[in-house]
Image (cartoon, rainbow, N blue to C red):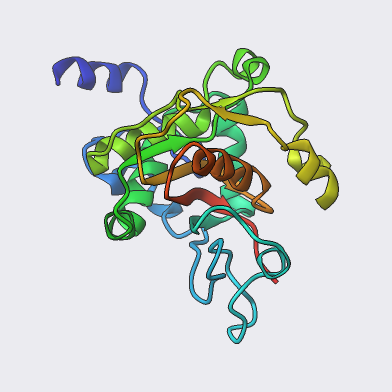
Amino acid sequence: MKKEKFLHLLFPPRCPVCDEILFSSFAAPEELICKSCRNLPEYVKEPVCFQCGKPLEDERKEYCYDCSRKEFAFDQGKALWIYRGAVRESLYRFKYRNRREYAEYYSSELVRVYGGWIKEMGIQAVVPIPLSRKRMRQRGFNQAELVAGKVGRKMNLPVYGRLLVRTRDTKAQKELNDEERKNNLKRAFKTGKNKVQLSHILLLDDIYTTGSTMNEAAKELKRAGAERVYCLSVSIGRGY
């Protein structure tokens, strides 16, 4: 504990929203973010899509546009924040400016908001969406695995960072249209084992857009024997 406090003073963490240095104790989740920044991330609220968890503008709808026109392999998805503004900037710094300390706050909020749901779904393990070898070399870490590891520890669940493998380097989904996204990720994942000895798995990623990535990963897990696959994301786009 003394070593942790020393490192905390030597390399103080930064607020995940404004990126300013935090000097307070790191023991409590509310102290992992500036007091003035706590209300800036926009939390996902009802009504949401029954399938993926995207917030809906029309409360009479049950599914977002994407989920109403195609079938997904995962059973249900949830997300913490809407991907825009302060959240979008925070995740950019997290991934591309090596702000790994943000993962502590992301995971604390995911567990605070969805810890009950995770238990209710009978989750047995957390599996992060993997990066390709090329992206792993470029970035130096897998942002989804970092958050997943902390969520797993807080929920007392095992985290299997090597259960899924990305077989090839795919293009960024945001640069593609719907059809290209679907083809871009076909057979992009495989399991490290021929048989998955888990029936209820939680897939975790930082950003959910159209669901193509989660869908292909869930397909592979179910092909290998998983009964149910749920998805959890730090952020998500709006539904229509």
